[in-house]
Length: 254
Image 1 (spheres, helix red, strand yellow):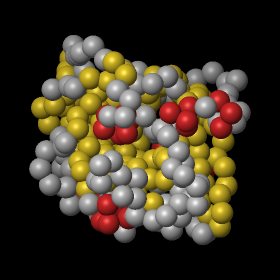
Image 2 (cartoon, rainbow, N blue to C red):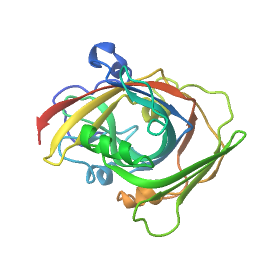
Image 3 (spheres, rainbow, N blue to C red):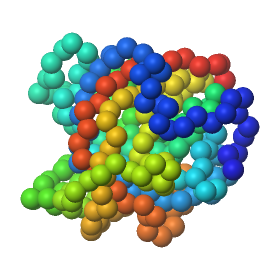
């Protein structure tokens, strides 16, 4: 059960791909080397970490917390070419799944670590997202990928992830937990004044498979306020997708 009543019925995930809801394209990028690690979480615990106006979105009565390392490529505004010194970088985000009072399901990001300082500042200012400066590295040997992230000011060793990217991918089955976790085309953010925003992205459905994971770290989720227990309940790797970015929409004042 979701934690708070909505003023509108909860919309389907598929409905978020409706072109009529997207608005104009303002940017483009490619997401690749995606690893989705998810843990089930108590919905009340998740709700306590959300801003007013958002409700924990649950699947079979459970909320979910994700850690997602990946690479961003060819990041650029619409009609401009990618820049070699700006358009390729790494990201690691901690997320959970929510809906607003209109019943629109989406993603709430607790943190987004990034090794491109200009991208961090642009995302903070333009999209009100909690980006963090970080030193990050990704190394590939064949299909094996090793990934490290150390947030600016972080004490202790870097967070490390290692997985095998090989494997045929396929779209998540309709109504499955995998679809609930990865087929998200809406994000929410809040500015310093407490104003809630809804943003949208569009891309073809992810083609996912279950990879072999040799190393992972729950450190970034711990910093976000979660006490994750045991191994992840869902581990998925996704093939690259080309992504269109659409404008933020300002919602009601909180």
